[in-house]
Length: 296
Picture 1: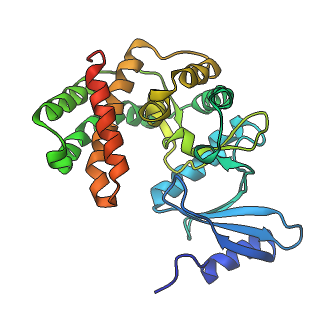
Picture 2: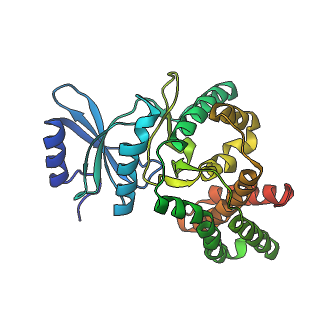
């Protein structure tokens, strides 16, 4: 069996052809996206690049589209730059970003507010990048219904981690999500925004990992933040939306409430398979919090 940490000979040959002879190749730890990533160092100038192999043709297509048509709107230094792609290998070569993944950066709350204010501006630019085709707009409008439909499967998989009252509550969230149809659409990142951000102490953070990016209701991009950091740091949430340039409308707030609850149930469903007790405890806390908030 081939060691997945080793860059295969065909991929190495392709990278050498694009970049020139490489001085070093090393695998990177898994990040927010389920891709395999290697750091490449070019021999002629020690410039660093990342070679990513996508887990599917769909992920490759989405990320390639994002880097070609949306990411340039973010400006220099705000995201990796696409160097080359290979549909044969489902691979992309990107410039390497400096800095640290934001979840690993040790920041005070004041620093978090500053970073999230700047992140809000960056995400607003992404959401406004490009215009969806008619087909993309139709697919974006149907996304919330698909997420609501998936909740039935997640409730079943969560099993006895959910009480009868929990199941009823989640189904109410799902039903309500299906009728929210006047939500602003945009080009979303699609993964956890915070997990995709890198911070190097410069004027603004940078964003990476676009394999789930697509046109969709922009509120979808805020679920992971509402599920995690914002629950305990409301002033960080306020700073983000100050940078974003607007607050959420009434239907977006309702959608975020519903989507956060459905994300909690999905986490409960997937937690046992990962033997992740902390994930299950967080999901339980989120569900209890939502049930105590104003109902949808």
